[in-house]
Length: 93
Image (cartoon, rainbow, N blue to C red; front, side, top):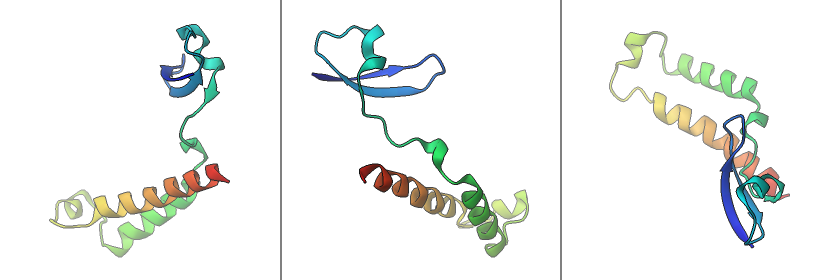
């Protein structure tokens, strides 16, 4: 058995486990080993948290984003990281 990476016809990359002699056209039939589906993130919650963070940090215009150390990158990273970790935990159940 081997792990292979392949891209479907919609451009999504996948990882599956297939037999050693499998041909590329058989990869889609292998045992899926993809990360969790990010489309299942509750994007409404992400948008609300990010919106509220922008308000809390007084980031209301492009000019506000130009301020050094405005914290936007850390806020985005924190909000998304929390959701992605939750998906991985749910996948383990």
